[in-house]
Length: 106
Image (cartoon, rainbow, N blue to C red):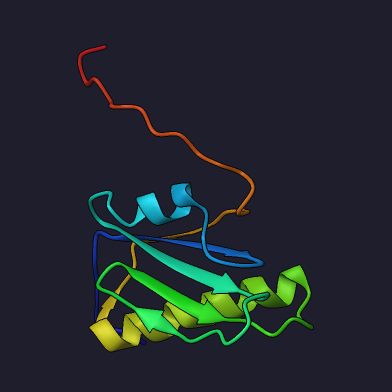
């Protein structure tokens, strides 16, 4: 188990190639990290930055198995950073989310 609990979210999504722009953009939000799994790229190689981790998935995985592999990658990331994520979010790559500024006074 990783050490202390942080305030960061981790978004997990998978798709046939590179992540769609909206998934990549999530990594630029404050306290937000992304684990992206690709199951269709030739010569796939794992890549990790401070806020995004791209993992290679087998083409033979079901959606559920891919989702479990992403969750395992996020747990490994917790160990590497010695801090737990506050919240895990699984999103389909085709389910684009839009974020609007929040007005606390509204």
